[in-house]
Length: 246
Length: 246
DNA sequence: CGGGCTTTTGAGCCAAATCAAAAATAGTGG
DNA sequence: CCACTATTTTTGATTTGGCTCAAAAGCCCG
Image: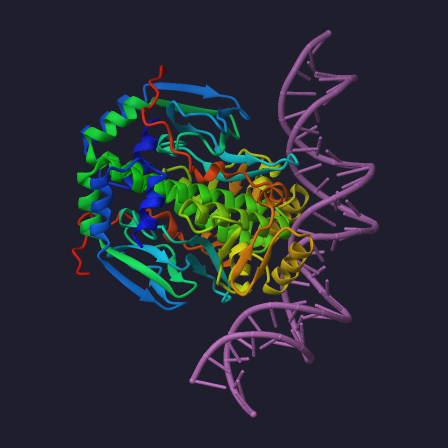
């Protein structure tokens, strides 16, 4: 079950068996958390690192008018708060969207791990830089794509990310969240999301029923959504940095 | 002129005089770059670290339909591509918005700097984590705020960031970009941006003329925009991490 | 003075929001 | 297993914030 973390990190750096064991040992503490519960709240000083093993969590902020904006989906294999301690206080909250299994690594353990194993340092930083890349793409999504493409793009990303940890081998994947959650993610209304989903299904692009998302033809959906997976950086970077002249 | 970098980094970590000197020495190579020129393009493997000394640059992506989404403003003191080498290839481009003075640090120099000086390592990572925090807030801005508040919020952020490097001591600051650039930033049309700007001026919240932005009453604008500067993390985090129980 | 940007204004339109209510589903406890 | 709720999904009618298209006005600069 820690497997999923190793798969994720494995995309960022080639980990030795010892390094994998070290990670596995670190995630000794695992808890099942029900849906709609916060792991950390805005303003908190994070005391431990969380990682999702099963289920979906998210980063989000609440607005004065009661609105919510979800800024990231955290799927199995994702770390929630790897490096936030450098910032001191959380500037957003993290909560579960579904019943989840969450690993909790004491910050001291995580730091020791990182200090002793340069390849893990790299993998951890890779993971947070990928988070940043995803955030940038979401901004493009919100700023410049109409509702149908916006949702389609998100579905493409989800498939790629779940595939990367072995959870979407065919075009079928679990997505046990509500349409309202999706609306808060893509910056639309639940009502409009509902209509767009019906349209996507009629267009044969994606169908989502009973918490299961089906993508018949990945390439067709990607073409529609103008999806390019490069920003997920799932292909490992060349290990040796290029020497350069100024 | 390197001053501005030290001010920025100083918000992330308390740097010694030696560390400041080391940074200053590293930015020996400075160039003036005209407006609308790329420093790096999507797909490139970054060879050096850039930092803005004077002027405005931005991160952006182009869309198939010719649209552009700006995903970050890079103002004096900001590093453009500190850690992207971990990701291998750029997933977005970085270009100037105005005539700018850009520092160029060979990647090897930057890495050596970071390796030898733990406090600089921290400061550099702090800077990229703040970038991520800004990105999250921009996502909230795009997803949940109407045009007027969206632009007002961006102005508040700009003021706070420029103030942090000594470039907006009263409510007056340079903003020598076009309304079209602003539109590409906030995900609106240039036409609509124009109308919103007129409205903000009439409301006495902010006026922007000849590349100079004036904010009469910071608190009033912040209230209107629901701006809270916490996500900029300009107050230094407590240096000693809290020891915790699992 | 003339050509290219920007900024500004106007009129009409459309994607997505709002408001409201019904239908379907999922829980919950007896 | 069934009533009883609460949540989620779906549909319909209407409104609106922001877009599109088009052209005028202002600016900058050689």
